[in-house]
Image 1 (cartoon, helix red, strand yellow):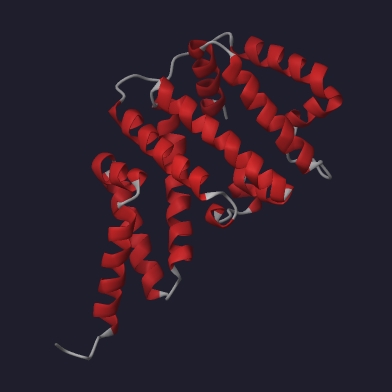
Image 2 (image 1 turned 180 degrees about the vertical axis):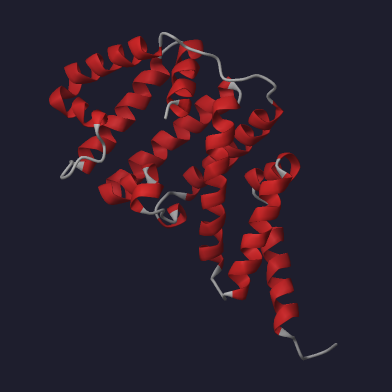
Length: 220
């Protein structure tokens, strides 16, 4: 056995170990099966990170940013059950982050505007696992879907009724939803109202709940 390990072989060993670790994550398995282009992109990012000597935590964070793009791609196309399960996990994540800091909540909700965070540092392990399982179902059912997102002409009316209900409960705080990036906005209140909005949507009958969520996700 050689006692000399070249940097290249050490990187290959690290890559192999990391891939084995990632292969145990349900979402990563689904990406490898259903989205070869993204799978290759993730592996390329891993290799670049290893060349830079980044930590496993940093590498995972790079991967999460790519996976975030997959959520935008597949969530509107995923099955009703996968969509609802994922949104329930998102609510839990928002609440856990907001309890610690509204800044964390905002970075989670708006990573492009405020910078992404390593959620593994702040969210309970059980919630992280639920996220990975839900994400795996989103990718699988979204990739297998052969239909486009349904038009939902009643979307505005549904949202307006929900906002009215929120205003009755939270008063003018409900208006924070109109401009989450307003200067000086109370981020803690906004995160609370955002959770309330999602909960109100999930109270709707399953069909309408999914149609509203899909319309939200595809409205720019």
